[in-house]
Amino acid sequence: MFLPRLHSVCLLVGAVACTGDTEPAPLTADGLLTSYAAVAAEPADDWPGINRWMDQTGELRKLEDGLLPQLTDTPDDPLLLAELGRIYTDAGAHGRAMWFLTRALQGNAEHATSWVYLGASVGRMGDLEEALVLYERAMDLDRDLTAAFVQSALTYERLGELARARTVYEESIERNPRHLEARLGLARLLEADGELEAARVQLERALDVESDSPTALFRLARILAELGRDEEAAEVARAHERAAILEDLRMRRYLPTSTRIMQQDSVPRIHKLLALAEFFLGNGRVEDARLELVEAREIARSDRERVAVLAGLLRCARANAGESAELTSALAEIAPDHPLLSE
Image (cartoon, rainbow, N blue to C red; front, side, top):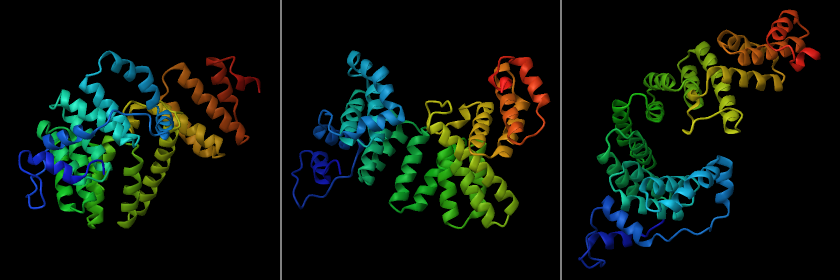
């Protein structure tokens, strides 16, 4: 726990003496912010693993190249302080995160996302009731901030208040039907309650938002199997395998990515197909690679894309000792100096 609860209560009560007989005052977001700020120490380099974590996730470069130089120029910028707090929260450096987030909110208490970041840091330290208060403040400031709703719902789940969590997910979806995490959360609760058909609907709508979501595909395949729809389940399971491979490639930076984690739909489909084909070829799954490349050939537009597709198909043909004259000719027409042509 970052802050002893009694310390929070003392600060909230104010002029009332804090004794064993005092009725604890209700938690408020402003009171919690005051109490956190009072004990948050200026961050020191006290966690050796943080640089390793940030290097692995790419956040270290983001700090070194952009955020830290800005902090030198504008040390009181609330948005900058909030972003640093988010990064350190994700790294598990909660003392450091708290220092940045409390100062961000002292500079701009109307920034709803900063309250979400602070709630996330507090919640990960185990203060779930306090985290809920902070998420409520974020929702009061911005009823369309889906992150606040989802984090609140997840916290209710951790507290075992599943009916309340379901209500929050449903409200989030009503406000933003394309919010993936809310759909996944609601589907999880519906499945746990045995409402498989309703869970299926939510997962299919989640896939309308992000067609390559490994989580949605995995759960949908499982539910379809439980519903006895075996052919559909097998098809979705194959799609899940492809999505899981793509996510692994993205995490290892073999695929371009957006700044939003898990937003795979930002990657052009042709790139996904080529990445899958390369993966399958590297693992000896030539027919699987060929199927990806056949689909890629239909949507390839630039010469560079066509060359990549033809080269992949030529490798497949040679691996199967199949006919490759047409592919060789097509590749030579676009890229006469391609290394495959001299093999």
